[in-house]
Length: 320
Image: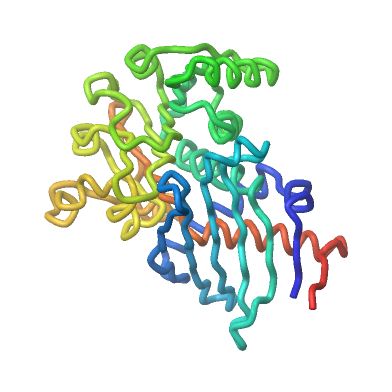
């Protein structure tokens, strides 16, 4: 069995690699060349400590794997990141573990790449102002990824804790990005792109604050009860998801699942837009909304690229 350490995967992962992996993964999710299984959700003794197990199979390559992701707020006290991620590959012939790839750092790139792909496909070409709700490490990566696909001139950071917002703003400014703190209403009303990356269980802003032509990426809702956007906005926009069946159960679109089932609200896979089978934005006034509930195919494709590069360099560790 092969093993790739956290340090090694962090060394090898790049934004272009993540972008290519996520595009390939979302197309596979949409064209039936892969199968995603229902996500398992659990908690530690403290209900705030959450983990998930997401699995998938890629039919064309006999690639079968699962991703174990955890969010442990108390890890702060140990000087560790709150989030952790590990991908396990199974031998398709025997079911035995074939490889383990630690992907906690790579997970930041993976999530941000999904956002960037949605922005590339759905946001107006002239979009240049960005509002980000949330100020953790993931928020930094969201900004950096979106800048790869749009000329972002200004970033507004919205966060409940001023100290965390200022820390992110400093990090962005040190990276040459014009960033400033803002209230929710001001940020929405003055941004072409809105990205939410929180663990919220209630809407972060009001429907009326989102102007026509805005693109919204919801990156935080990945469990029942999580919610970052007002339902009225979902009924107003053009909706896209990484995986439709999962999005309406644990993603942002769980709150309009009945509307989608009834046909009064339409939801399309982002992968269909990526492969040219569905239209994305159809007018400058469209409000486009992407829900990223996070799917195992994204983790599997990215971890496989990291593993292949590690093997190419001869750096993968063989475990007995």
